[in-house]
Image 1 (cartoon, rainbow, N blue to C red):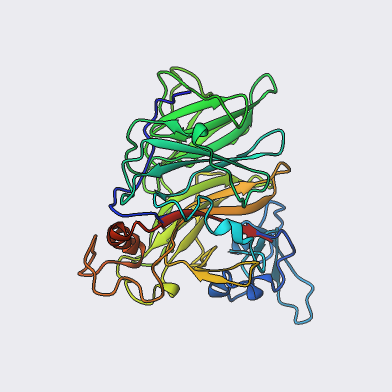
Image 2 (image 1 turned 135 degrees about the vertical axis):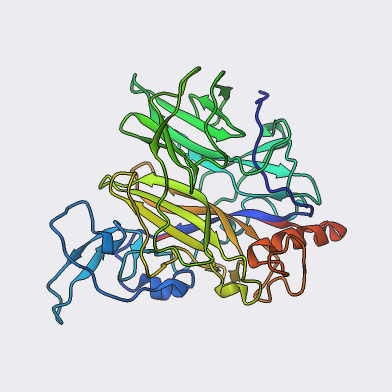
Length: 412
């Protein structure tokens, strides 16, 4: 059916160079996994923690674990919840290798670009990916929402033309995200959030119906269903809003007025939030982050950030500036790839509520060299690492080359 939506997109010019990738985490104990992982190697932590009586996790452990004593040297250390690792439980422990099918969830042979999307698991175990597709040579102006299916979250996905959904031209920074929830009648519902609208379905495959006279606040939503209510981030500086129901005429109220930026290093800009509440009841936000002053050696540039809170109102950020994910991914076909930017993080939890994968939007083309002397979308005289995709997409138009894609990475 036709969905009346405005989907978010980056307003660039270029070709199929940016795609959705999926990173897989293996949910094992966090002991040395990060050191083996090329993704986590760039984000190891130092220091010890301070034990507390709380069973809800410790701040020194990023609320991803508890601080325990009893080691040979007597120093307390963090015991991390899977898939988190590192001395402060701030690094996602990626699998040693991730399936090669996750490198580009939309075929690289298609010259059009994509820039991440929502993935949901249906009751029948089929995975559904909803991804906007941009015209050849563009990274903006999407008018089609592609619907792919797979028996594995990392793909490969089938993208039948008949499943494509026409949408109004999609503006910038507006989804899609998804929330699967149980309504007041104990019925599982599926929701898609993009373009300022929310769409509901009884099945992950659709059909989708827009909620009339209802809009979410802000752009680029980060929705959560928790304790019978819905929450979304308006922006990192504006805060979080909440509403009791997804229905026509429902109103939003302020829940948290600001995401605390204390301890965030000078020059870091967190964006693209994805938010969740863990099994302990702690709140978390993982972001893409960047530094507009970085334009060379992009393989070591700022890439991600993690905020956490006991109540969703007072937020913390470790002064060590630990990055939850980094640039290089190793695949099960023996290859690896350094992605100069990995944006729009979208965490995937399985049917048991276990964090298993992270999906990201990535530039498939730019390497360690960065943007060189380019000045497209420049800051401080140079195109920064996170904007290389803009320049590359434009240049790839001549060659009808895929540049932007969605990735899926496996977490251990």
